[in-house]
Image 1 (cartoon, one colour):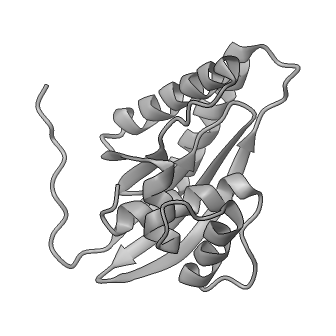
Image 2 (cartoon, rainbow, N blue to C red):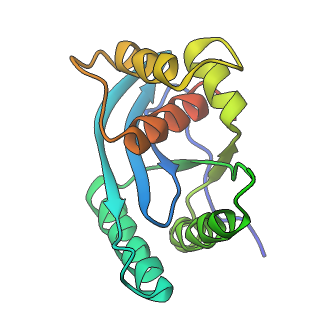
Length: 169
């Protein structure tokens, strides 16, 4: 299939949505990147109730992320890659959430960059092994915010957007 996306002109603004996927909480954050300056636009979190069937939770995530995409019209996306810890069942749920989120990006022909947790930490805090609190504080400082964005999934999503803005993804 041919890629019909047009490259952005040099010096143009890039509106990047960062996503921290999860079935219970999917964080999102929007930044604008022009020249070498990253500016904050918005952030939020899509939360689903554990009492709902999985397919309803996934559809809710898909519907809400489409509302965010409609409202903000990003030019590209960045999503944190799946961190495969010891809990396989939660990894599967996150992978399913990543799937519906990736589908939403593909439907809009949004370039989607994958950001590893280490790449995000490096891009934001300058250390691949930075602590979560360090990364969140650096997100706050980079974007000139008065407080750390909450919930933490939204702060992580802004970190992914910053990572993509600097070409670290």
